[in-house]
Image (cartoon, rainbow, N blue to C red; front, side, top):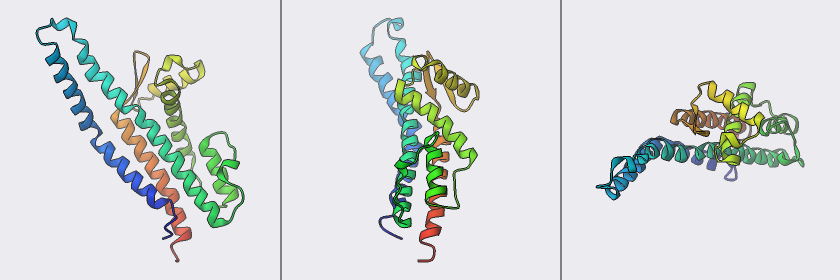
Length: 211
């Protein structure tokens, strides 16, 4: 296999991020328990009502703050991985037009245009992948642009988020703040990982199977 093939490093990234995700829940529990122990010790002898807020912080806020940015990580993993793979494809196919030269209605539609019309692969991300990535994009945008504050978004984007929350896919709202469940992160990681691997499998068969 060509040592310049980005799939080598991408597979490592997928593995590392997957391992991190496997340990996330236990890590969050450790952080929350440590926080509670410290706060309870500092408030020893103080009436309970004066520090009872620490329990909602440990149960809701700390897990939310740790989990939420991971959606951005997964989105970026997909974006950068596919970009690097297609740039490799550009060099292999000797194409002058790069991925950034193509414009589509969304990131993934731009990738599909490049894959089909420039690289002329017999591959594309299907409608199921495009639909799910669209959902991830909406969640990512809320986190990246408004730090998860749903109320600070414009009405159109806010309505999109509310609809996703109502779909019961692992999203919720806590005091106008977006919250993502651990199950949602696992599902999103599996989706991102499988989508990237499908493209890599096609490219590896195309470029390396007979070498």
